[in-house]
Each structure stands twice: as structure tokens, then as C-alpha cells.
Image 1: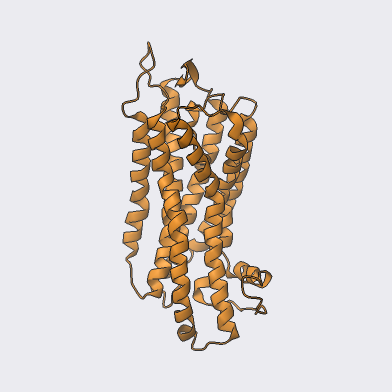
Image 2: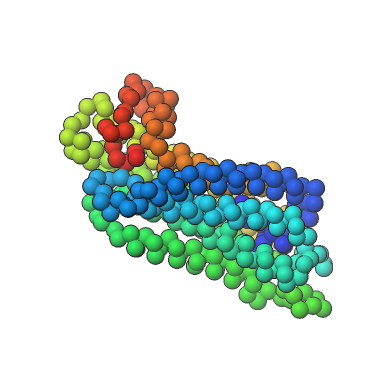
Length: 340
């Protein structure tokens, strides 16, 4: 993603991203992707050692397989972001054959190379959206004592992105006219791009709306589950419940922070395409924000899904979230497993 322009980076005209602006944009994307790679890589290593015991969970707790697959998807997506940024620097902007009519400057080579990178990038980011949603669903199912086979999650999370990516790329290649006097396809425009944005952003909006509702339900279930699970209900248990709620809130905030700029950008792009306008470089600042925040999801997810100590530290610094209850130092062995 990071961020989505046109059908691929080889179709981004200079009116949107000029040659002097490209190094700055790509530098931000690569820098953020390196940080995201580090965070996602650490998560992959951290959760890989817990995969063997994933089937032996006795209490509601994060599924190591889900968090591992989410981190792995983040890791691969960050590699795609770096490849995409390099492609923007290496491949020339498209040639303008007429008002709003562009054709890749490097011809068929740019289409093959650029489309491959875009498909990989979009696929793994779509996978992160679905795994983020599945994490929330899995926690809620555990609290309801409903056992969902891990194989079902795998089928959903690895095949749903194929559908979205397939529809997104199909929309920009199907029935798009050839360039005048040539045998190469034009860059998509108009209704084709509208469909491209819709199919690409539907998973983001779905997760952004569904996750808060799921976590609200899970929070209510936790209030009923934690006291019987720990065998008591004291100030410590209240702090455990509050810490878990903060963990849920942090997951929602991280996802929204990383992808809300893309949703705003997508709405603006679709509105302008429907009105038949070409968007100039006046949205460069928004695109740079996207280039920074999208890959940083891999790093920020370390805080959202990572050590319980961070949520406990945040709980101690967020008295207004806890109705100003005095913080309790929770030992990891005494904390609710959902924090681990």
C-alpha cells in the first residue's frame, strides 16, 4: 500500500508526484519500512517459539499463530514497500499522450515489474487487515467458550486477500483501451480507478468499523469472565480488566492511526475521479503521512500485541482511562493471560 496511487507506481504522473518530490516521498517510505521490518521481525521471532503450545491454551489468551501470521504479513508488506519505493525512483513517470491519457514510460517491462510488486504489497497488507480482525474475533470466541479451528482462520486470512487483490487488479486491466498507435495498455482512469480504490479499501474500512464493536463486546465478556477465572474480585482484578481494555483500545488506535489517512485519501480520490478531475500535487503531505504510517504498523503492533509490561506501564500512566484508580504493579504470572 504505502500508499495507493493509480493502478501502480509506474502510472503516477508528475502532476501528482514530481521528480524533485519523489526522493523525499520514497525516503520516508523506506525509512518507515525499515523500522516496520525491525518491529515485525522481532514479533515473528518472539511468537515463533510459542507456536508449539498454541493448541494447549487453557484460558482465554492471544493465539500465537494469529499474532505470528500478522507479524509475518507485516514483515513481507514492508519488503514490498521498499521495493515499491525503489521502483518509483528507478522507473520513469508515465508519458502523457493526451489530457488524462498516460502510458507507462518503460512499456511492458514496467507493467510486469510494477504489477508484481503492487500485487505482493497489496496482498500482504490485505492479510494484515484480515488477521487483525481475526485476532479480535478469536478473543471473543474464546471468552464465549467457542472453539474455532485454526484451519478456518488460515483459509479466511490467506484467501480473502486473494479475492480483494484479484478484484482490484482486474478492475484496472479489464477492458482498458490500448494506447493510440501502440500495443501497450494505457494507465487506468475514471471508473476503472474508482473500482480499484473501492476493492482496495473495503478491507480497511471493514476492520476499522468492526474491530471497535467486537472489542466492546469482548470487554463486557471479560468483566464476567476474569473474576471467576482468577477466583476472586479485588482491586487487582479490576486493574487486570482495565489493562486488558487498554490493550484492546491500543490495538484499535494503532490500526486506525496507520490507515485512516489512506481512507481519507481514498475518499478524496474517488470523489475527484467521479467528478472527472485530475488530482495535482496538493495532497503530497497526506501521501507522505501515508508512506510513514503504513509501514510503521509493523513496529506499532509490537506495542499493541507485544509485552504485557507495556500495557501495564500505559495503564499506570493513564489514570483518566481507569477512573483515576491507583496503579497496581502486576507481576506477569499474576496478570490475566489475555495480556501475554
